[in-house]
Image (cartoon, rainbow, N blue to C red; front, side, top):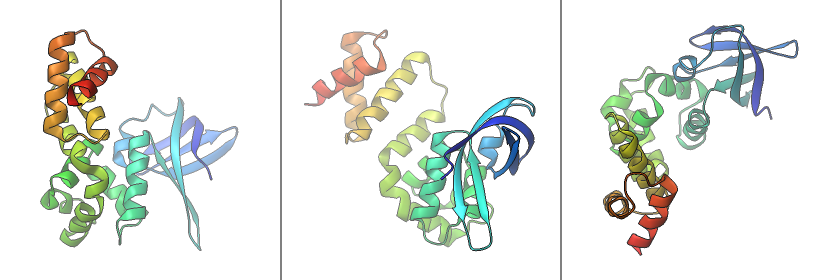
Length: 201
């Protein structure tokens, strides 16, 4: 299994890259979300990878962030009828925060507007990923839609942390706001989460 490539970016187009790793040129297919984050050709790059083995070919897929690769794997391994090509289309058509929000909110209409994703596929994405994305996806998407101050970003991160621990979004938000009122705006995310856990007990 090839977990990542670290080398010189030789060539990059919106759908694929070629990376020179010690004189060997690796070609990887990428989503637009990763293409936007690439450095200029000639610079070093680290690309997280997923190797798909078929009868007729070994195809390498590349991602600039763990979240992109995780979502790609979730799509191809969890949603029936979605292969690597459609999974790349999904990641190219919607950023991770928006995608999680669409799943959490059951937004079939937005998902079905992605190339290669019809209404039935969009419905399967929502049904089969909803439990895995959860309420945290909706909260993250709502937060991403607005410009956050440094203080609000800390609150957002702390709320997401509590939700990952099983809190419902309103409870998590209330606990973190109460914690910040006591600790002040200079409190770190870790301090807010610890205090929020105590508040929620």
